[in-house]
Amino acid sequence: MHSNKILHLISQGPDSVLEVLKSQVGLSEDRSRELFNLGALYLNKERIYDPETRLQAGDYLRIHSDPRRYQKPEKLKDCLLKETADWWIVDKPSGISCHATVDNGIENLIAWLSADLNTHFHITHRLDVPTSGCLVLGKTPESVRKFNKLQMNDLVQKEYEALVEGHLTLKGLVTHWMKKDQWAPREVYADERAETQRCDLEILESERLGDVTRLRIRLLTGRTHQIRAQMKLLGHPVLNDVMYGARRLREGEVIALRARMLAIETEPAHVLRVEAPIDWKPWLNQFRPDEA
Picture 1 (tube, rainbow, N blue to C red):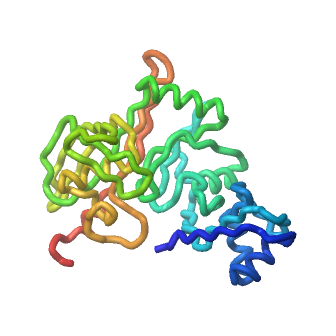
Picture 2: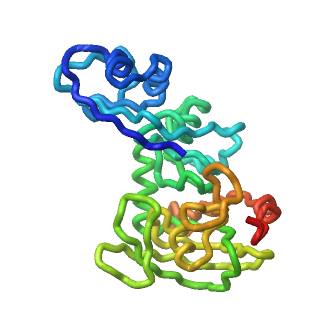
């Protein structure tokens, strides 16, 4: 696991950032250039990629010396599900970021697809790194604004499927309260408390599959890690979601949570519906309770 180590320096005089990394931080030239290539360096709070960038006395340099890395999936173009005049709907793979992160500006779905298709995509909404499934990418900033307006007016429906540990027979509306906090894992409570936000989801289907349960879920409020945190509080974490108390079944950032369907009411009486294919067999074959 990466350490997320951040170094802070104030420049003492004119020099190149590359020389500062080698002389004051002790990084090799190869490692320094790797950090530049990843976009893990900031000068006066602006990301920089040029190792010969010059510093002046008093400049602030921030170095993410152990950036989180992501592996580009094979055949990424195959993830495209639907194209409209405004958007691409894609099937995001597990284990990768949707967009640039603070310590890695190039290893992400947006950057890879933009390069492969020789275009530029814009993020409209997000899926967690270990979550897969339907994701809408805007073709233009105006397309993003259009999608966001539809979401604000409750004209976008999102359904997920998950495999959770144990037998969960609960169906219908599930409400919890999430602590306002920027750090993961997110905490949720059964009752409303100070500095919390309401989390609503609806369990549409609950099917027992051996020693796990398959859930179909309609997400009603889109809090960060919402489904994952709510499942933990219910005592049925998503398979392999170690952050939220599940047993480890696989290495890497992969969990059995999938954005299965998006329904976008683009105009009255016209709904764009897109579904991502789901095959839970590999997960079900892998899950064996009480073996650890």
